[in-house]
Length: 53
Image (cartoon, helix red, strand yellow):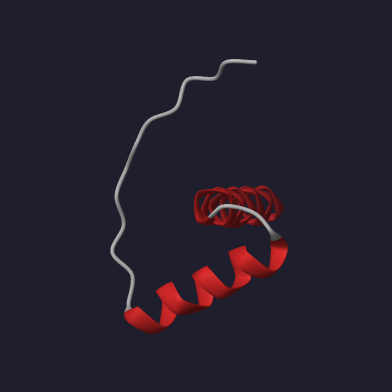
């Protein structure tokens, strides 16, 4: 399946970058996958909270 993707850049502190590297390695997934999942989860929860108001 081909999906349209847009590239974007982020700057992380060294400690956050280290945590991201460790987590991605432990889970056997890419750092991009971790970041994408985290953003999706954050925005989904935010949308749900907005609907509850």
